[in-house]
Amino acid sequence: MARQYHRLIALATAALLHSLGLKSILILIGDGPKGKTVANDINLVLESERLILRPLTLDDTELEVELGTDPEVMRYAGGTEPAQQTRQDMHKYVRRCAGGCIGVWCVADRVTGEKLGSAILLPMPIDEDDTNWDLIVGDDIPPGEIEVGYLFKRSAWGNGFATETTKRLLKFAFEETPLEEVVATIDFDNKASGRVLEKAGLTGEGVRRSYGGDSLGFRITRQQWLKARGKV
Image (cartoon, rainbow, N blue to C red; front, side, top):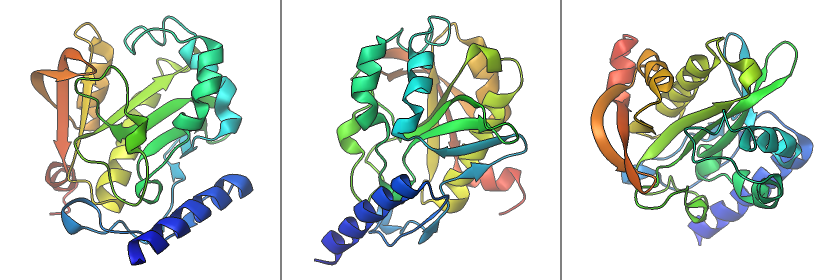
């Protein structure tokens, strides 16, 4: 009964957050991985030096359409998607679980508010070719690995935004959620993203399986993140 009650509160509060455009959410949820509890006061709007990351909403549909229909942006992300398909799937893309810790963020310029791209903390698909959105539900962090990733408009390339975004999401993951590790995978030819992940602190681990095929894997643990910052 308690878990069901918490879930109802989580769903109702998340809906209120979306409707009012609030920057934070105060929520009680169930146990996370290995019995750990997600922090009660979760600020889902994340700021860095130049960027602001906020939960993706239906108001960001045209941003996702722009990203998904650009062949260069989607070159290493499974290829382009028809605009109508993106619009139909937005109800999945705005899903969140674990008190909002797992989901998609819109990345914008802190000063101008311009939408630059999107970034994720989502379950890593292994044999499937896309995220299993059915896992994005309820109080708990989904089973399996959680990946970090990003897509940026071409006009935002070359400014270090991908590295800044990845670092901010890792800080959130390891300092405000129960996640013990975060992974990422890239196409063998995507050397630029490999450099981004290494700058953000992830370590390459060679060939692995993800998205239904072989890719290059990267990983960072909570211990590694905290140790690099002198917090352990």
